[in-house]
Amino acid sequence: MALLSAVKAGIFVVQAAGNTGPSPKSMSSFSPWIFTVGSASHDRVYSNSIILGNNVTIPGVGLAPGTENDTMYTLISAVHALNNGTTVADDMYVGECQDPSKFNQDLIQGNLLICSYSIRFVLGISTVNHALETAKNLSAVGVVFYMDAFVIGFQLNPTPMKIPGIIIPSPEDSKVLLKYYNYSLERDNMTKRIVKFGALATICGEIMKPNLVAPGNSIWAAWSSVGADSVEFQGENFAMMSGTSMAAPHIAGLAHCGFVNATAALNPGLIFDSSYDNYMSFLCGINGSAPVVLNYTGESCWVYNSTITGADLNLPSITIAKLNQSRTVLRSVTNVGGNETYSVGWSAPFGVSVKVSPAHFYIASGEKQV
Image (cartoon, rainbow, N blue to C red; front, side, top):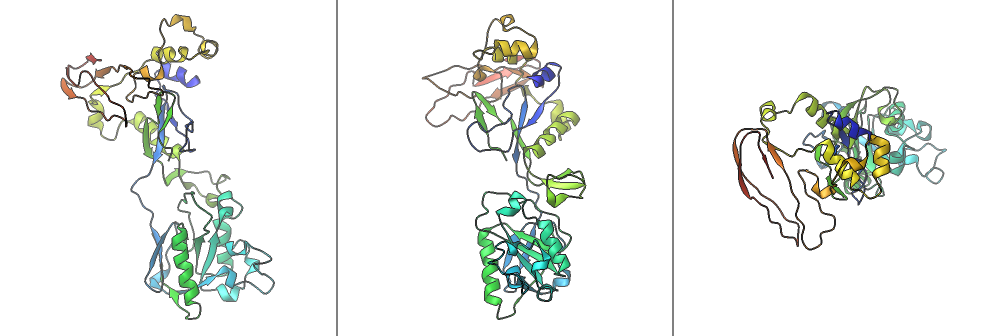
C-alpha cells in the first residue's frame, strides 16, 4: 500500500518477483500498480572445462585460472590421499576437503585434487573456499569438484577461485570423471589442462505477474567485502549472483535512464494507461477492504462510486480466474505515436474461444481506442 502512494506521486515502482516456485501463489510481488520483474537467463557464458587424458571434455563452472601450457597433471582423489590417522569410516565427509590435517601432502603435492560437492556446500556447512585453502596448503596444482548424486535442483553460480579449479554440476558428468579416474588408477593416466575461461509467470487472482522478465542469472553485482551472506565471496568487492533481485535493477535502470533503443522510447506507439483512481477502485472492490484502504491511504471507498475486478484493470494482459460461460473485458489504449492502423492478434487458451472487437482500427496521434 505504501508503494501505491509512490505511484500516486508519479514514481515508477519496480519490484523483484521473488525466487520461490514455480507453484501457485509463489509470487512475492503481486500488486497491479507495481511493475514486477521475473528472472531470465541470458547468452553470456562463463565456460570452464576439464579435458581428461582420453580427450573427453567435461564442462563445469568456476571463475578460475587454467593450468599452464597444457601441462598434464595426475588426478588424486581426496579419499585416496588420507593420512594414517584418518579413515572415511571416522569422517564420512572427509572427501569434501575441508581440513588439510586429514591428508597426506606427499600424495597431493603437484597433483589435481578431486573433492566431493555435497548438499553441505548448499547449506553452507562446507565451502569451496575451505577446499581451496586445503588444496593450497597441501601444494595441489588445482581442485576438481564432482557432484554428489543427491544435490539436485540447485543452480551453481561460477565461484571465484585463485588456483585452477572447476565444479562439475552434472551428476552424470561426475560419474564420467570418477569412472575415468578409477580406470586410470593403475595406469597412472593424467588429465590435461583446466580451460580458463528465475520465477515463472504466476497468476495472482486475476492479475498476471510478472510483468516482464530480465537477465537475472549469473549477474555481476557490487558486493561488500565484509558481507557474510555468501562465504564464497567474502573479501570480494563484486559477486556473481542469481535471482529476481538481479533482474529488477535492469528494468529500474532502463526506466530511469531511458530504453536501450532511445528512438523507440520516443515513439512507443500504444500504451495501456492505468491511473491511481483505477487502482483505488480495484482495492475498494475487494470484499472487506474499506477499513484497510482508509487506514493506509486516508481515503474512503465511498468516494469511488464504482469498483472493478483485477480482470478489468487496464493492463496489457487479461487474466480471468474463474470463467463461467462468457465474460466481456475492456481495454483502452492511448496512441502516443503517430497516426497508425493496427490489427489485433491473440492466442486463446485451450478450450476457450476469444473474440476481439474491433480486430482492426485506425487511431490518430493522442487518441484513445477501447
